[in-house]
Length: 180
Image 1 (cartoon, rainbow, N blue to C red):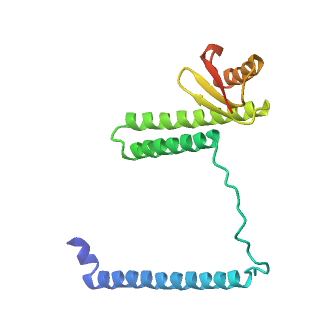
Image 2: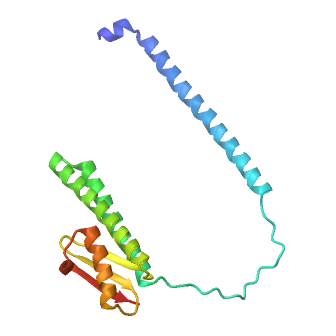
Image 3: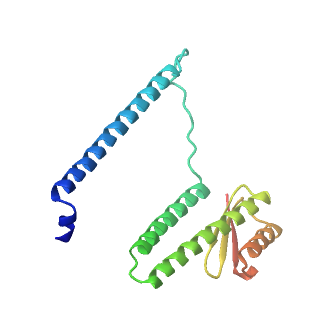
């Protein structure tokens, strides 16, 4: 009650009304400003529109390339990682204990490093002359699929050396296979 004796209810009510009115006024001004900017952009878009002077030929068949194994797998791998990251971020946001939050953060960091190492190994394998490559890092092993019809012993050794150097695994923990 002491607060009300310092500020009369009438003064507080007037101040609150002033704040509400100022908020409404600022919303109206920003809305008008955004509308004016949108209209200017629309006019500019219309003035820069291209005119088609040639008829569009609809009889042409454009071949659509089906995504290959490597592209499909990368997309699926990225989708799964994204879902895992979202889940872990949700765990971090709602964690009741610091230990749970820390474990989720460590898992995200591990996934990020794993993704970087896989991309680095894939790029280095492609630099060796292969069309494409997929690398899968697991806890104690690494698998690689190389885009080629067949692999010679020397090519397998080249790929395994790249993987061992980047992933820090022993040669016996590396599996290399070919996929056309």
